[in-house]
Length: 420
Image (cartoon, rainbow, N blue to C red; front, side, top):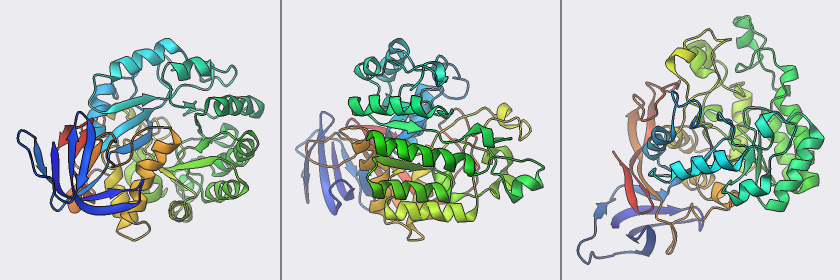
């Protein structure tokens, strides 16, 4: 395969150039101004398109095993490919939980038949109960790329500190869902003016901030690579910035919905704007954008969380939290970060490719000779309307939105896995 005349952006080397890319056996063989086909190669004309590394999403729920009426490995992989995502890291809160080698190996074996790279994080605690550590070494040896009890906070500080010490020895990251339930009366909705209008107490930002404050100190002391998942509060961003300045190996994810929407969206979209942690104030949204600008937040991840239409049609206090995000993440980044000049396209892609690759020790996220041929071709100027999804679920507040940045082709392992 030869990709001709694309505008190539590689955040790993921070280079951009118009170039041709030659691919063979799933590997980038050559990058040059002009590469003439020798005959027999597939030629993809990329004039007018940006060519970037395939996106890497570190926070995904494919609901497989246990909840495959919402999503499964195959539909999730198709959604990822349509969004330009070539590598995903799935969370461990499946049924059964990914707390044993047997469950982990089953998922990874089935994932081999899919067109994208599906990686799996394992649970920190057995049964997500926060009481007994999983066999982290055995899980790493079986292919786990990190550890998380996502969906449930780890409330016992000494237990978490021990987990951090273990993952530091294993040189893998630990990702934390930071919401102290003792502060929360109704999850998924920010405690503020909007929740008061609805007659609901909601989830105050202190629920997140108190655990970020604690766990930043544990990260500093343990030396572990600690990820604050789906950060939602401006004060949490300030805390992460402080702990980074003190030398902690602390990282933060921002979701597209948290840098795009505020809790006002709940009044318009109802349960489609309900997620954990919740959408917060305009001040919080602006602080997240500032954190993305200055590097405090080094990852953009979707927290892709499919739910059925029936579940999301329940009353707001009963419906599950979460939205899908794989098919809109790049476009939301271009529309709400790049076009308003909060970030350059290079900086946006950095947080969606090489930063997650480096954190999770993955040999992806770069365009270089000898690197894996995982690529995305997109038009950052093309407008399109969010209408349908490859995902099995459609729980998104962005349906009907007009966005910029259209994925035209996704290539994984040197094979075209999505074409517009």
